[in-house]
Image (cartoon, rainbow, N blue to C red):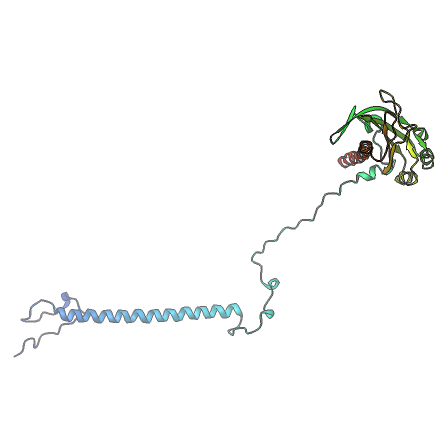
Length: 291
């Protein structure tokens, strides 16, 4: 007679507390059977996990496909060239906010100083020998000139000699302001003639010749010069002003082409007159801009 006949079978899926009594057999569990049952359960669990993961992957793929189809409006991929795709302007904006716009602004153009010294109607700033030739000396570079006598007259012809008086009169000169500067035995008289218009001043410059001289101005320690001797002269114009220089030696010596310091002194005075006239225009333009 074999052992175990007639006893209820051992159920590996039930816990030990629920197993039926097994006659003369010991209550010790069958460890081999339990191991086999545990392995079976683990295989079933792994199989369920693998099947669940596969199903989840399929579900995600389906969701992505649906999203792509919804975005493109068609389940088919486009094989059109890029030129047929919607342009940047057709794409929806990332923000619905309106960008504020501002009207362009610009500062008014600066006033032209030349406008104020081109006509007597605009050139209203005071002018005199003191404002045109200020101070007691003039420094140009390394050269320092001492200022001598000055003169101011509305009788333009009296401030000129040789052919210049006729030219001033013809072009309706209204005033001549002069000053003399000296340095190292050289004297220079610079004269500025005023006209109502730029055209009159320009014509004066054009009509002046090699014998058109401003009259030298002496006194206050400056001896007579350039009355009977050869001197060097210049003529120019700017705006409604014509300006002249006459430079020579105070000892009565004639000027020659080799006398560089006489030429330098005359050029310095001409440059100074030009700068003073231009400055009048700049000052008046700045004042008008501030109003």
